[in-house]
Image (cartoon, rainbow, N blue to C red; front, side, top):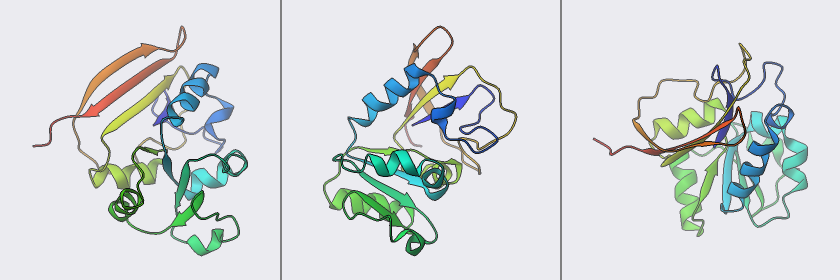
Length: 173
């Protein structure tokens, strides 16, 4: 799940989190969708930018897993079962979540983490909010090679200029 500018960036070029530029309607959609997920996965760069809102909401029932090459660097922030840090490959992360009984996981990026999960073919659905902004630089939704086919299953206006696009993974060949 991501919000992106019309030129394909999920972060503003100065590294600000999406809350600073995404529409109110996207924020509402994000909260509603996250309420249907029991866990989420994102990278350490996303965590570093959005640390305050992430740590202020860890009392909810949703597990947050932060992928990092250095989980030990975040040991003070870790809360088992609520906020965990891992250097495991994506397939192991997903297998561990399934083993623990988690059923619906939101992949929240950034670009490197999205690429890892997409390249491993572990994503069933893409939910992208397209905001009417042009940044010219920033973090892309995917930052490496990946060739997967998708089918558009929803194209909905969130407001007069913002689109919500939902894709499902096309049949694997």
